[in-house]
Length: 80
Length: 223
Image (cartoon, rainbow over all chains, first blue to last red; front, side):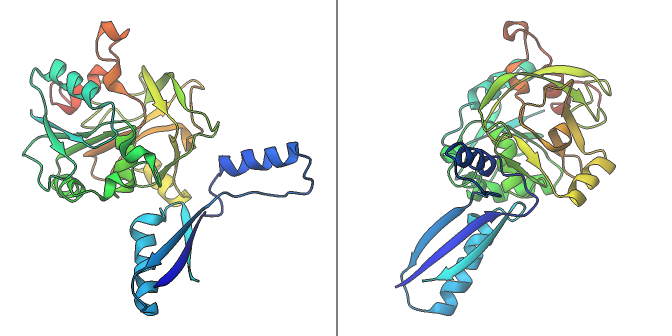
């Protein structure tokens, strides 16, 4: 069993209204010095087999085909 | 002209769309279920609005990976007219039939109201029934209609006259870049738009500004 964590984030330059709202809420809670918040997604994925190379290739393909919209999002795949 | 309407779980504007097409063309559209791998020979295929797959992951993302999409891509490549409204627009973007993406509204709020649209290109298979620059009324109802494209894509859309509709007179409800409400593919046979023309086709709706879009797409007026 291989466990992986996929992180999907908005590309630089893509407006993130949710991140902006969170930024505002943090400052309303008196957290000073927050420069920027960008919201993203985390996927914890367990793979049935133990072939690391195959898992990595598959996970990257999953990101390209479904998990991320590469028009607006970047992704990273990490085996944990 | 014959039309088809794609059906997916979670859509809720499909019946409005079927009613609009039936009322305007005099014949009901055929329906295609998401798992169908073929689409009958028709002149116009519509992906209606709603919340397919509960908007899980990203709006339209799961729907665009269902079996019908391959058939839809083939039909679009053959030149069949394809129109996506609201969630349908999101699905066409996720399916790669149109460029760019639709993001959360800048206000973060769901908007359900009437907006004004400028017909930015009246020389298309979908907009021939309107005059160039005409301002029409149209309802919107969405949470993720904030159109985004990178600079190069936006410039291409602008230069090639592929922006069919823009929000007019300060009524942009979602922060969409360049006030974009609807765009075309390079060939001009695929239209995606956030507003709901199917909800303004007869006086009982309070107006019929959306009607000419269907009349154009169904070949009932000269384009």
